Amino acid sequence: MDQVIGELERRMAADPRAAEYPAELGAAYLKECALIQDIRERGILAMKADELFDTALNLDSSNWDARFTKALAMSYWPPQLNKGQEVIEQFTALIQQQEMQPPQPQFARSYVLLGEQYQKAGNSDSAQQVWQRGAALFPDNTDLENKLAPTP
Image (cartoon, rainbow, N blue to C red; front, side, top):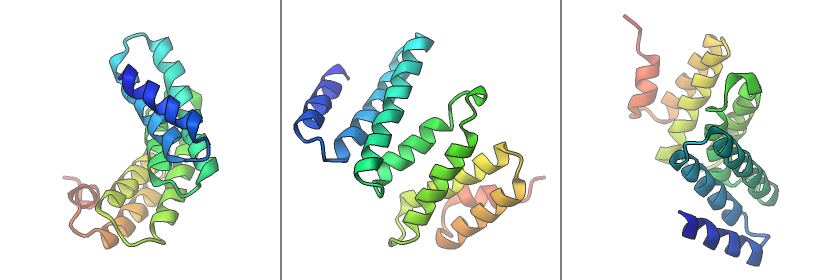
């Protein structure tokens, strides 16, 4: 992983206007987090990754990978950091961006995750609406189907 991170850092330094390098480096930092036991080091890497996603989005606000990975990673941050509303905003922006493009299978996950964030925030009605909207676009997605299934 260190070699990958080193190479991405080199590429980012060589081409600072390319949004894909900070987005990929941020994702690499998150993968590195999974390999580290020290919670403090994990937090530092997670914050670096978040900054890199912001860098990528400042260079290209439509960078799907950067926005998706940023929102997904932030959804795991501890509740006391109060990132819930920002996660909702990121997924909402992502869905708006997606709906201006031809549907792609990976887009369904944004609807699932945004609904889950609404549910965490205690807004079940909004969660249901998002899942229904996603299911209309991705009728074969089992995750969305399961979210909309009646609970026994």
